[in-house]
Amino acid sequence: MPQRAGLDPHADPHAAAQAESPEWAAVDRFLADEGLAVRCRDLFEDPVRQRLSALCYVEHEGRLLMLRRHKEPFAGHWTAPGGKLLSGEDPRQAALREVKEEAGLVLEERPELRLVTSETGVGAAYNWVLFVFRARPVVDGVPPELLSGPRPTAEGLLDWLPGDRLTEFAIPDVDRRLLRYILAPPGDPPYLIRIRYGADNEVADMQVKPLAREEFS
Image (cartoon, rainbow, N blue to C red; front, side):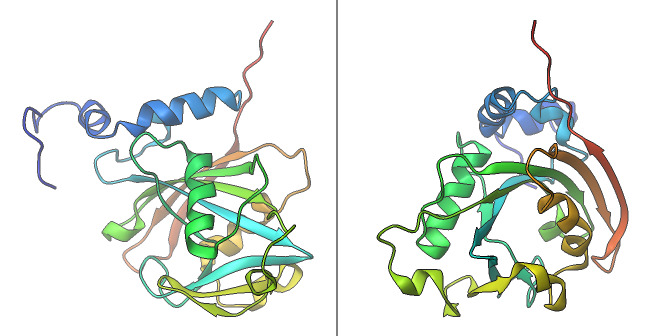
């Protein structure tokens, strides 16, 4: 990875990554607003390689908006729409923007944070700190074709898949393991999940814990 001018390649990797990632401050504000007792720096396993991103499981009438991806990671598989955080953008803003850009849909005002996954792997496409949301689209005045499918896009094929049969489709193995947390009943806490991929890009190790809420007097 090329070094920016003024960065010491032998310095602490957390400090170097933070210097190159102005969005860390926006993520910290987001986490504080969520009342979560964790900070952005705590989420990383490899802050030099991992990139901040967000995706959203959008639900409508028992179906989930999914994208059959053209590109890695998980090319050929169905995943929720999402992408990398822009500089200064917080995770929820990124989820709202990505769904608008990829599907033309506006989400309800406050998508629910379900997971933060800290993912590391051999390939560059498998190193992420990923914020996973769940939301419903605004449907009043929306063209009917945006609430049905399939629809080809630059990123892949968009379609609304039945939520209760999602595991029958070609979704990544890691998503099969995460669905129970993503689609948990309202009020279930968000989770921090650390995932390590093996050389075959399959899950080699996964550690799950609830994200604690800060208590204020």
